[in-house]
Length: 155
Image (cartoon, rainbow, N blue to C red):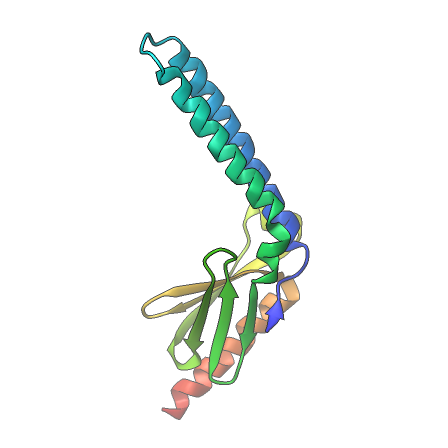
C-alpha cells in the first residue's frame, strides 16, 4: 500500500484551523445573541456547545499524525484498494472492471501544497484518494483507465 504525501498533514491542519475559527465566531455570536434573552440557563447552551466543538477540533488537530498513518492506497491489475479512517477504519476494494470514470480534483487547500484528490467512480459509488502529487495523479488516472479498458475488452 502506498502512503499519501506527507504534505497532506499540513492541508488537514489548515482545514482544522479554518473549522476552529468558524466555530469560535459562530458560537461567540450565538453566545452574545442569547445573552440578551431572559430565559434562565439558555445563555450557557452556546457556550457549552462551543467548548465541546472547539475541544473536538483541537483533538482532531492533535491526531493528524495518527490519521495519516491509516490513509493508503494500492492499484493492482484487477482491483484498487483504498484504506482510510482513524477511529472508524474503512478499506474499500474497487474491481477494475467496474470503474467508469477517474476524476482529478483540487480544492483551495490542496492548491496550497500542489496536491490533487483522485475520485474513482463506479456505477454504484464513488471512492477517493484524499491527496496525491500532480504527477502521481496523472499516473493513477492513466493507469486505472488503461486497466479498466483492458478489463472491459476482455469480457
